[in-house]
Image 1 (tube, one colour):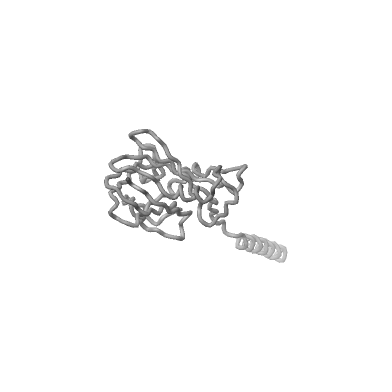
Image 2 (cartoon, rainbow, N blue to C red; image 1 turned 135 degrees about the vertical axis):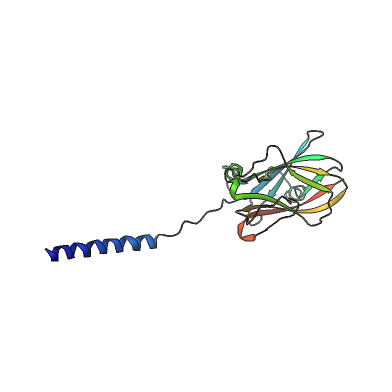
Length: 202
């Protein structure tokens, strides 16, 4: 009797040990970032309702295909300079894609919006005296703490000038700030991507 009980206890201990080992061997699930290869920016003059679209290839990805432009160099140069007028207001709207397969381009914008609590879009100017103010637009998304995502913004210009801008989509930034003309807590570890361009205010 005791021998049977002892044997059963040993069997239970052995089974529990095997289960524990299997759990320990299970690899930890790691968050997989989407592959961002292309960002587009629609800039609309709020006085004239005229929209210009700019395309930015995400650094680190090869693009062997074109986007309908015969001269790749002209295409790149034209889309690294955002043209604005002084004393004007503009809406800026970003969208993100994976276009590695030109026949099956994946729109990643909705996924970023769905994960608004884990994302924020930041701008950083090389020169702090730009005469440009940036505010969240009425159609911008907000997270659970009421911080705007900043994918849809309103830019208001005053003086003329040429300004270098870095824009970054951050995943789980260590903090979110209301000072949107500088990147706060710009942590490379949580950077989905950055794009750089010039703003020409004439």
